Length: 263
Image (cartoon, rainbow, N blue to C red):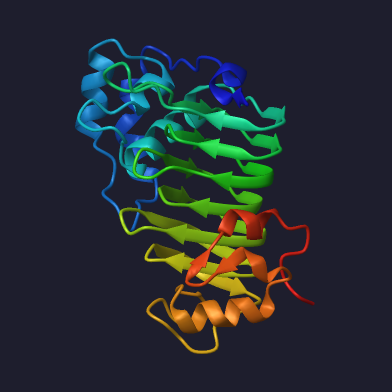
């Protein structure tokens, strides 16, 4: 598996970037489900001589930064650094090295990122343009944070971490959120054939789904909540019922099917 950090390289901000922080922060739409960016902490890092995007995304107090902090760094990069799109093929990962303090592995893409394969994210990732993934996106909450300043398009998103998308999210197969420590937040429309939540908060301006649970659960009438009734409903519409075993769903196996849903 290839490391995205090696493909992107170092992204440096100009020495006078601190003069733009307030302006860029004021123009940035604030997350609704998590705190806004800590401008004071960012200034402190810049004052300490940290001038790379990955260094600024790194959080000195905890393993993973808040999405708002990551978004502000991305917005500064988008404002100050020449756009550079990145196009990679194969299985791509964003790993986290916890042998150092603070943990290292954060990646900032100063443009659109296209992955012609699957994308596995553990360390924080900010994409200043669109994120386009031909395969499956998986992350690893609570260490991972994914922030996309544009649109996100993929076959499937399987998330247990923080995901903040400022544009639309379109997944051609499914979107699944699991565990209750983090949030999937989309400021545009979230469109996918089936939207599944295993105790995971999902917020979007609008939801466009094809397959709906037979009755509304804790997340409403557009999201399968992995209760017994909703699992039974999924079992009736999936192309290969072996992806559901009793009260457990193998979401990766479901997303990997060429045609996961019955016609």
